[in-house]
Length: 311
Image 1 (tube, rainbow, N blue to C red):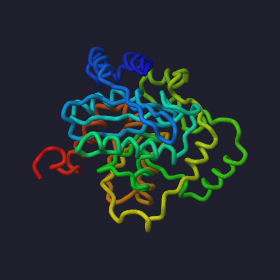
Image 2: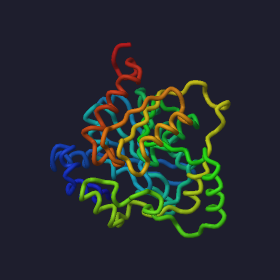
Image 3: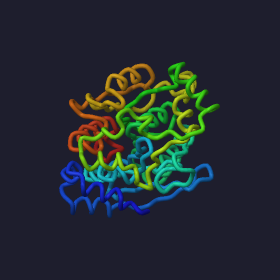
C-alpha cells in the first residue's frame, strides 16, 4: 500500500520525530510494516501488520474518524519496541480497503474487527488485545459489548450516543432525510485544532490525504448515533479487562464524558487512565506519555503465563 503520506507527515512533525528517535528511526518503523488482506462481508480489507519478533501479544487497532491504519504507524513502531505487535485496520471505505469512501456502519466495523481478531488468534497462541482511538475507542468498547473474542481492550475515548434518546431520534432523521455527506469538521469539535503540532494541524486543515475519508456518509453517521449493543442479559457476566484512556484537556471528547459513559455503559471490569494536560491526539502529540502506561497496564492485566512469563 502507498503509505508515503503518513511517512511524510511524520518526518515534518517534531513530536513524532522525537517520539520515534529521529528520521532514520521513523523510516525503519515505516519499512517494518507488511500489508495483510482479508475478505469480510464481500469486501477486501487492508490491515497494516507491524513486524515484531516474539511478540508478547497482538494488538488489533481501530483508527479514529475518517482515518486509516498507516496514520498511526509511529504508535505501532513504539508498541513493537515494547514487544507488542500491532495490526492496524483500514475500515471499509477507508485507507486501502474496499468500499465507497467514508462509508462504514458500526456493525460493519465490528465485523471487520472480529475477523482481524480471529485471524490474529489463528496465527499465534499469544493474547489478542482490541484497541482503538477516538471513534476507534468507541468501536473498541462496542466490540467488547458485542462479545468480540479479545483478552483485553484499550479504548482511547468512549461515549455511547445510542444510550441517549435524543441521539437515536437524530439517527432516524439522518437515515431518512440526510443526503449530503458529513465533513469531519462538522462531526468532530475543533477538528482542525486537535493537534498542538503544526505539521499535524496543517495536515488536518489541508484534508487532502487520498487514503483518509474526509467525509462520512449519512448512513455511517446514523449508525454511530443510533447503535445499541445487545442487552446485558445476553452478554457474558464478566468481560475481559478494559482500559479507558483520555487526556484531561481533550476538547473533542472530554475526559468527563469518557468517565461518565464508562460508568454507565462500559463492560466490567475496567480501569481509567487520565493524562494530565493532554489533548485529543494522544497517539500523535503524546506518544512518550501515552504508550508506557498502556504497556504497563497490559503487562499487569494480561495473564503472565500467556505473555510468556511465569504464572
